[in-house]
Length: 282
Image 1: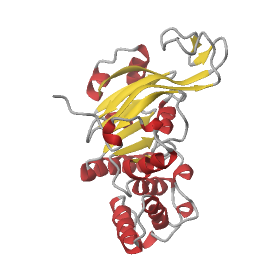
Image 2: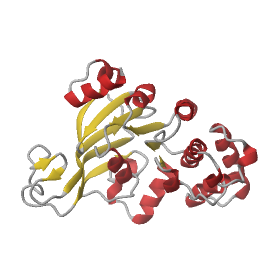
Image 3: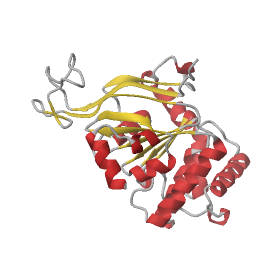
Image 4: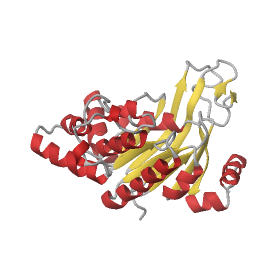
């Protein structure tokens, strides 16, 4: 019997704009009158257009695509930053995977964000309080999950900052004083604070120097090995996906255009856009 995924996303749609009879209800991803991901008639933007995927325990699922392909929209919908227009998402850690997380109450959504998922944004400003200390950022996540034991928070913050190779002597410093790479590492430690089953990583190396990128990617690999966590990894860079992902989904104009084992995608890409991506990597 096939393993049950820890996350299943079914037919996610995120539309910006009211839609129209031609692109709205009753239409499908295949017959909407879209110019790229924009309705030619009503000008609504279909940022995510019928996205379905599964993530299994302990795997890294890579999502690759150019800017505007829908990668970040998917991640932000999963983390409740933006509401989906339609679709469902099921997690084993919530109602035994029987009820969509998008049907959860506001309190339940906070529980999911604080206990079941962790998010690392491309821009650390979105994931960190820049004027709080690194340890306080981690403590904030732990408090949000219901803990009030200051001693245990200090121990956990120390453990996590050591795991992401930040000196404990800098625990009391604010992330605004850190380099971009260090800020991303603090974000990763905060995201791991409550032992989530799924880590969402959105373009975590974009804008970093190549040497810093390599260190962050190596850290992610170590985190996966140490904690056995499942990861949804978004990148526009196929080299990053090649290094980390077990399976890969390719997105373009809000749709999934190709999916498979990462080696398969790299060695035998089927879609013309994927072929172009792979060619640029060689």
